[in-house]
Image (tube, rainbow, N blue to C red):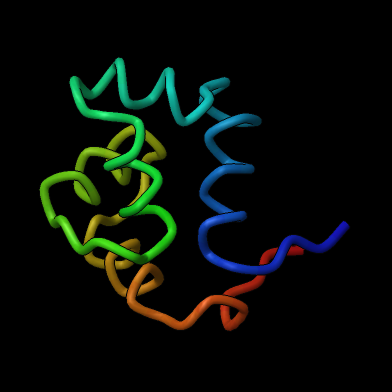
Length: 78
């Protein structure tokens, strides 16, 4: 199965590795779900939120920020 787009990759990893929905992640981080969705979708840039998500997923915050800065569809995971 191929998953395209950074937002889809992050959502997939949240569900499979962390067992969290966007709403649950937002609650865990003390954030608004719409803020999390906007950041993951690349519509809002928030380094504190990106850092929190990256730590939860065990990823490098700078690498995740770089992925989120890419236009949708350029990132892929197989």
